[in-house]
Length: 62
Image (cartoon, rainbow, N blue to C red):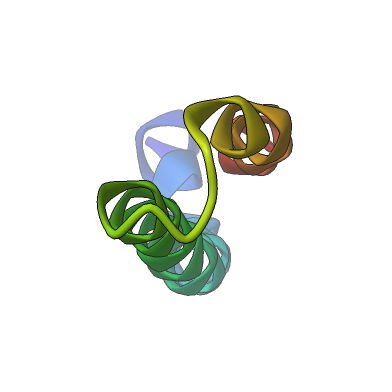
């Protein structure tokens, strides 16, 4: 019986972790969108955007 209930004991921890990740994900999504708009408006070149993009992707993966 305790084995069945064990996953639910950690549920509040998971909520906290996912809540933090959601904020980080939203921030990085906005950074990606801003990068695209800079390229679209020719504020930066595609090459410059590709220099910034890998850092954003790495941060999304963590």
